[in-house]
Image 1 (cartoon, helix red, strand yellow):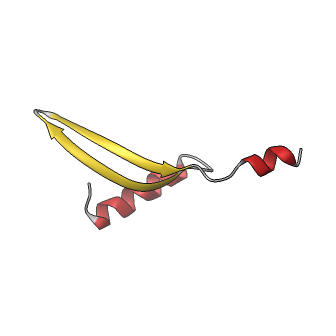
Image 2 (cartoon, one colour):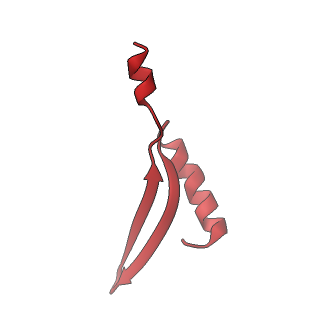
Image 3 (cartoon, helix red, strand yellow):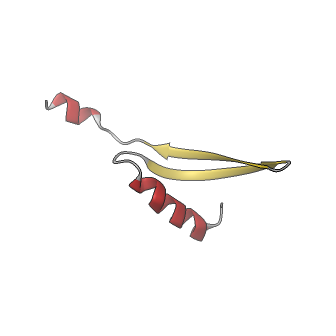
Length: 53
């Protein structure tokens, strides 16, 4: 998951799921049979859309 090629593919899918969210990084940890993924993202500035209404 933390490989740059895999990150690129996952970020394309993640970024398509929201108009504002953008994936910044992924950190993975294995605990027994479980994989925990911490996704860091930005949400952009969507406040200006509300002020123009």
